[in-house]
Length: 199
Image (tube, rainbow, N blue to C red; front, top):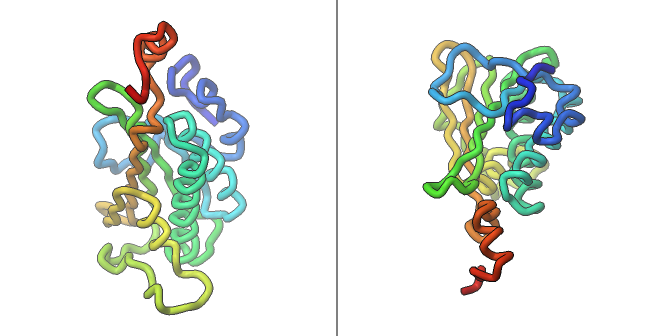
């Protein structure tokens, strides 16, 4: 694993070294539609053995961005379902193909944590994004609900083709305002009795 030492958003500062030990941070795929660099970029092989590490990583980061425990688990589940879909449908269970996970924290106008943006990319065969709707919910049988879970958990979901090969999934989850951590200056005011969350 490689990361910049001393960076405010480095895995060591986030307390994620144990989680990421089996994953490898990388510059990411060459093609990118983002101008700003992701705070976390991980490449993992399409092996189900690495899914638990990815879930732990996402849940830990979401917790530090102000999400409650239940929402952290739901976001981690959505990422897990997205990765499973790539492994199952994109790579046909091949265990040696690359998948990239990139993460950006989102902030509001007052620089408070406002959510998280996640992008998952692969080099699988491209499909029409319009077909990424999941099966009919009335079709009662095991499996096939991954896309529905992703759309139910996340606030924004976008499937698209990458420029040359593979697919890109962009997901955004907002922090409910009641769950957003206060800035340090606000915490100091509350300690002095100058403010009340209910007031």
